[in-house]
Length: 144
Image 1 (cartoon, rainbow, N blue to C red):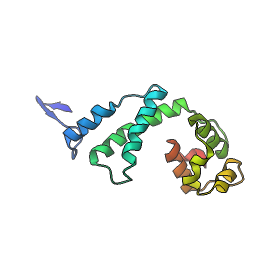
Image 2: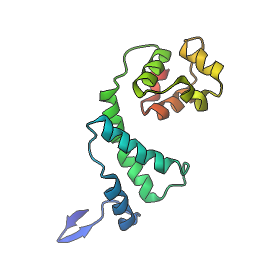
Image 3: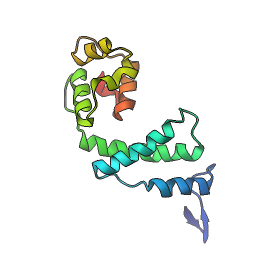
């Protein structure tokens, strides 16, 4: 909210102020400084994304747009991506997040494809790089 000549006006147009305020009060977004805060922000994001792309309310969409840069800023510092081959970056990110290789099955479709990528025997397409970027909350460019 901003003050204009003594009146309070909303910054974001087209949002239900009360619904957005409830979401903000529940999420309490701020600069993320710890792994715990990051995990809590990711839980909020997953809850909204579980509805499916395009099915969130405008208020939920605004909250996602607020949370994404906060999460990304934390993860860029907490999980620095070394100069490495794409398959090494994927392995590092999986390890840092405590995820098994099978977590990549929705992206690659088969265990064989996941194995080939993780061992550097198969390259990563632009579409797969984009999916990996969204999955790990990093730029798709690190996988190309």
